[in-house]
Image (tube, rainbow, N blue to C red; front, side, top):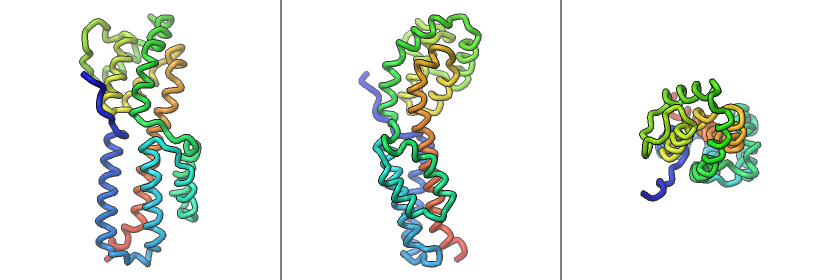
Length: 219
């Protein structure tokens, strides 16, 4: 079978963002552009800028310009500026997409297994394997790797990534210790940055939409 189809961000986050976008479309139609009491023009500008930032994060592009524009628009709104502060460290380079992270992890599979050889028999790995089994059950192709082996852990993480479940893959890999943890550490930082950025963008949409939603709430 060929390579797995490209999977977007965390499916739960993507669904939430799509729902918010649909809600925004309905709100714009309902308010008919008459949200002056809540500074409607500025609110819609913030929503648009947030959408542009979201697209840049989703596609793994640098987003310095989008971020700075949103900072200007959100001046005086501390909830938004606080979230933007969390995104700032990633603005220059962007955050890696799942489509990038997945093959990058595949190149680490061998080095992780090799690094684990030195740690074989350590108690931490048995604990990690047990925890991983509670996170997800994956049927491997072939049965050559015992369930409590590093090969099985790597195989399961690879399957999680193929399924688009970056969060569970990260949770499993954070259980690694010693040399295997050192090998995977740079990848984990990139993956955690992706998850954090997706969460931040989702929160930004909530705050941005709240600026225009009250226009109908009391009507």
